Length: 300
Image (cartoon, rainbow, N blue to C red; front, side):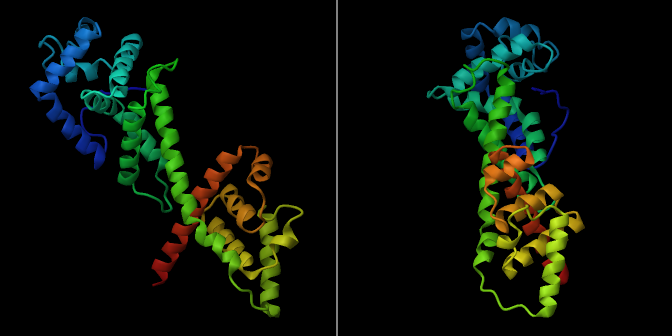
């Protein structure tokens, strides 16, 4: 989980700034003294010094922040866990050293934070890499200070990453769900009496939607009566044809906004949980909104 052996910054933006800030911390004599005192107090100084001979300034005894970070590298799991738990205990305290301890934890977890950030960036809209990077770092700092990790069984780095990822996903899901309000409001738009051509088009949309699994059995008539819902189905079908939405994404939107299928029922049909289904819908709405915005820009 921890991987601190990086010869150069892995990404720009927030992570590049964290690397630059870390270099300044390592050069700060006060920080070096504080970290050395921690290691002595936690009886980890000798073990950390023994595994960091290849680190710059490793001849300095007792070891400082650079050596502490190097001790968190893969290959010494028992020492890595002990050092990380000690840092998390200090980060969860409310004294003046808590912020520095949490900052070291964040630095150790930057490779994992970058992977999390990349995993949450979507090709069709949503937040930028740096926006999600800021969110991930903030979540990582908050989880490190939360006092939930160091006492939990298992690998502390894995627990830390999992809690951070849950926090980020929840934040993004809430953000995306808020963006879906415009789609929900479409149901309240007044309907005009459709002419023969529009009725024929609606029949084609219903057929295509049924073939794509967008209209669950037993809800076609109730959901398909309004033109607003037909228009939304058309938008979803077009986005699926263009590759902006997957079939599962299309169902997540259509079942909720045009068929009023409860999340628990939809999740059961899809073989997942209601929470996972809601997150899929949130991401799908964000992709659809971004695809529509792109079409408008191209048409302008």
